[in-house]
Length: 252
Image (cartoon, rainbow, N blue to C red):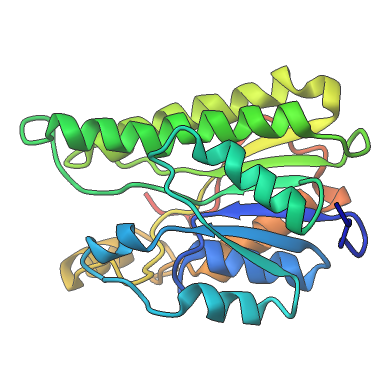
């Protein structure tokens, strides 16, 4: 395999299916900081959500990365997918240094109306796939001690959003465990809760309610989450480890 990396910095960013999404914002920020980016997307998820699929999004995101991007279609409900993602990322860009997980299954339902199929799908994508990606990363990481990074995006939704909130809680524990269990590799692991970021999923009522709950009376943007991820992936961010970070403008 030919190693096409320019400076040895390869980031795998999952859940980059829409040009306006947090994942795309993170991919663009890291590319601007000199990272080569392998990013995953899964259009069938967007197709069944209220915002719908965005035709050509993967190509547009790839173009915005100034030649540093490699798109990988990935169904994370399939337990074999995480290993395949790493195989493809390594084949196209080289060994992964930073794993940034923005993927999610998010369909609102509560304690009484959540279906078994929905519950299982949420945990397959948000929890099981996260574990398998972290496991694959830990088995394959070969970077210099202190350079490895694992970051997961989480949420504190619970009421009326049972399977999403519960599976994101599991994600928190999985990622934070990596701060200890992968310490011998010199890998730091953190979770970011970006708070309410409207990437097209909010109704007018939800938007207004979240604005009232945020001191600066505005919503977060993908760029703001991306700046924090960029810092955590930098040498200056190494000492932040094993933390669940609230980057939400004081949202309460």
